Image (cartoon, rainbow, N blue to C red; front, top):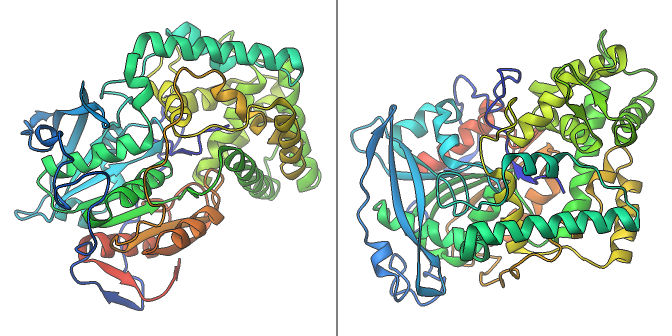
Length: 517
């Protein structure tokens, strides 16, 4: 399964244009009403809380710790302690790293926590890309990015060395009994390495624990209510927070939403269709140009891409670096530019090289960008380790081989071009060293303040239907629709979306009815 909630941020070798493109100015959408005292209703949840803004019993020291901010290249950085296990105050502690972009006004409204998705992407890295945030947000809020537990500069999940990681991300396994057995063995070895090198944290990186960390961060930052902007997987994290702490919600924006009612198998199947639809839109656009390497109809163009990706299993595509593009890497290289239509031209360049010159340099660079891999074989982050560990901590797809085969066949039928890469997702957590966490939150977040959910109509990674579903699932959810391509909307779509987000976060303004931009 591809990362359902990773919002590409950093660019490799300046190949890709920035994926978070901010509109020059924000225009408020029409037909809005002001919301007074947003987030001040409801009661706290998440265990035995002394009060809506208080700490769970036994964890008071974590909630009342002082934050020591240090200057760090134009930002402010700090590290705080969090419980290793939110069910056991005596189990020890881990570190949560934060980076703050201070507000530009003398009297800011408070903090705005942000998360870019993943799971496994860095909130610290998101804050460093200051153009992601409109001038009104930068003026009114201290924008605080944090690396969730297990991620990046916080106490990380650690598994294997770079060479072994590269092999894990590159190796193709056929969908035969032997190939599946080989993949299960590789996953088992990976999981055991994670357990050996990470310790008990590996069993405590679930999204509920990260949401509890967010409430602790709210407290140590001095905020009565949590204001939050989460993209993609960050919407799952935000919805989980609202379900655990409805009385502590302030203004939450969930952009590129995940349907939290879906099973992992359903996520894989629907995401496959999302990428199929996005790729179809790309091929239509490509064929309308003069330099498209694809030929014939849209369906024929899709078949050409499918053949290229599948053929890479038996005949990896050569590159000038000496590395070869396997089927797995070819899939990542095709999928990566679909996150943002501004990057479609780079997929065209990659396909031109393959079909006209029989080389895969740009396709490999796109795949490396997705995997956060440097040209020298090192990796910029532990995003793959954290992605797998968090997903396995949250839930499991079926591990029954016959069921996996049936589901894989259904996926390919619905998404014939790239669907093969979404099947057999039950293998991803095979023999994982720790069981998944039990759900302890109200998916409806009863009592929470209004929560903005944003969906893009042809989002490949988090299909639009998921945003519709999350807005319905949350008792106080309301939907903002961006009619367009790509993953997520705020900061890369249009002034209508940007204005709606900033009017809500800054002023508490809720659109009068569902808003379509």
